[in-house]
Image (cartoon, rainbow, N blue to C red; front, side, top):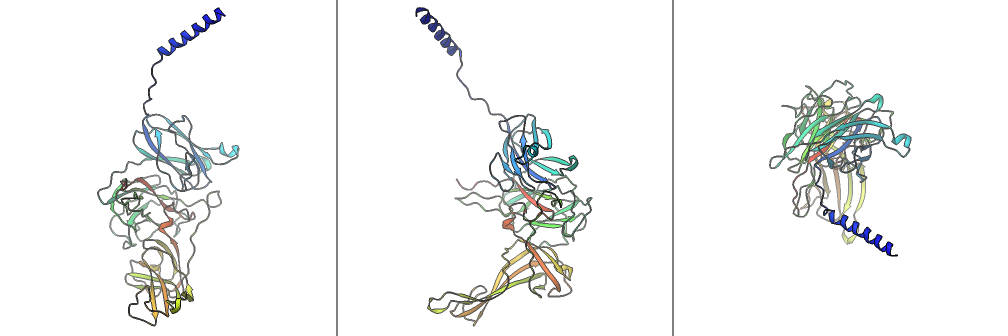
Length: 437
């Protein structure tokens, strides 16, 4: 027992000595950080996973990134393009892209493997583009170093990642087409005048940032270089939401301080596992619905007649309907086709989306949207208006004019509603300043 006590004392003494020599713990210094997000623009395959494989800390990944999205960063569900996530700067970062799937035979397939370095305090976007076949997948990594827009302004730059415009409306199969980008609102119509925002932009190239006034009705239009009257595609820019004292702003074209990258992306390759759906509903208004009064075209899409404001507390009742309510707003984009007169056709922007109500009988106080008195038949006509740059031979339009609607409210996502044509998606590079505590 004595020897045991002596041995135990020795062990305790050694332990105490070791503790005495141990320095107090200190916080490790923060590693330098950049920002990183991913975008999948492979047009011939299903979803992919982005992984940093050579270290763990500050190594953002993104899973199940389907065509035209950024997947779920760090396992967090995301239905569009994610914000920038912290990534270690100043060292080699090995990014490997795998096919997404539960079967190991699928999820182990490597689409791309590349090593890059990021500078501290700089945000980057990793664009995966091209094709999976024959090793055609490529990476373009952009530094999203947008300048702070001037007071009351936004900034926008332009990037071409569509290898071909085949399948566009109208179809342009020439893979050598280098497009011009035009930024405009309701009164900016083809053929465009002046200088394009980006000219002859090659595949894989991007422009610098340009400054613009804010607008809730901006769209970006794409034309072949030097052909300002032929619009390949036009896409509304997300409007955003202005900030208040209690709610911070949501970045967009109508919110000062926002910086945006507009990216032309390809259609999905037919017959592959990439999405093959999403063409908006084809609308066919009644004959004679497209009327021209310079410089505007007005489309009457339908009517509804209601017996309104009946006495005795009875509910209003619908007595007849024709056509449909267009459900569009000012600034929404439509694609018109089928008119014999070409001036009506093509990509157009709604300059006015409203309705006109006629009252029978008429009474003092009637307005274009409401009948003032009781026991009145109110006939409401739903109307759209857009501006064109030339005078058509006939009004109303002849033939069978139709349209498809691209509603801005649903295009905050990258127009995933239609994978059958090239499109323009918008990434937020700089957010406006907070307005709420």
